[in-house]
Length: 252
Length: 315
Image: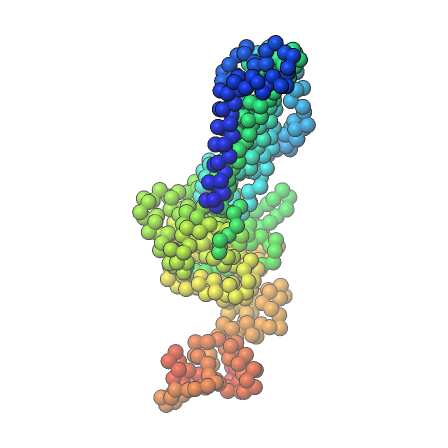
């Protein structure tokens, strides 16, 4: 158990150091990038510093994740209460249907309603990010042994105590897995925000595609890839920590 | 004390419990026996308001339960179920501490209570307090479930087939444990089971339910002597009733006492406090028609004749 936790710590650290190194060091790799695009006038993306783009990209994803978690977990909790049961099938269907929707389509549909910039991107990311969280929260809450809930009520816990002390801790591992999927997808999807005027790590990619400069594309892609790996491995570590003891093999 | 007066429960259009009246006196262990779906678990769950009764009146210690806050009521009533319902993310100690913590006991008192209960159920604290439910055997988990039910020191204990999922040997040891604990604590216990042998062994009083109604209630002996209908007779084991009745009688009641002071007996003998059923089994196995009866120290106090069992078998 302890070994797994310690090992899980090493990956986020490794990816984070690589990400930091790339953010600061990419502009110094002109020679290597020149190989990809020998004919271009410039091979280093200089319109904006990578550090700034990284922060803006992260803020956008984090804001969307915060909203998605509030909406997704909140909705799952509501429809799993006795008085919300009528909406349970609806929530389940919305979660499944939403999964089949391509994120680009959500983005394209958000622009006419919200205009250009960070706002429609935030909206699209939130909407798309809600679905894995909602689906996993529902699965996590409904997967709890009914006898445990019966016992919790029978011991005299109030509904709020049952939710905070029993249901959410037991569903936490599955909920975190949903958040992990949502955030990882959104780190990639946020780059699309650059097409509608949001400032993200997608900027060098879009600029590269428009100008036919593969070196720009590579710089954006490397940074987004490293960011996704960092965050994903961080969640993996969190998930190990949230695992209920019942999921671990008995030591008897 | 638990009182039910003309209590009914309907689910939609089906009548699960049909106007039952029942009184469990303080310190009594009352067994609610019946086949699956006869309404015995529903009856139990109405008492701690996990399910609301549709009609009638339920009182505990003289108070109507519908006038009490359900959470306050449940913290006053111990509750143990077949599947234990232990919280998998909490240790054994934390599981047992649930009700004391809900009652707002100071940490030191909670800790002391948990240690006391672990000792009472013969689960050494140093070995078990820090374990998680997934690391326990079925019997150990059920012991923790019973400890958790007793944790808030409730006067009333509701038990819903607590030993139903255990193997026969573990079940018997837990039944003996419950009898031992009850002889120390004198709780008011309502115990649901479908196993008539378990009820005969544990209960002071047995209530037989069929299709939501009470068909008969009385002491184990009274039920065996006079089953009110074929259903009760069937539950009591039909042709094996004689053996079950013998299981309730002590050898001491039917033996021929020795006139003079007895001597130590080696070899074939039976204790005066053993059941007549055990005596019959030994006689059948050893092909003999008499047994020396001894006291706890192995000194002979009488003789049990097979003859007298047949002639004076009735209680």
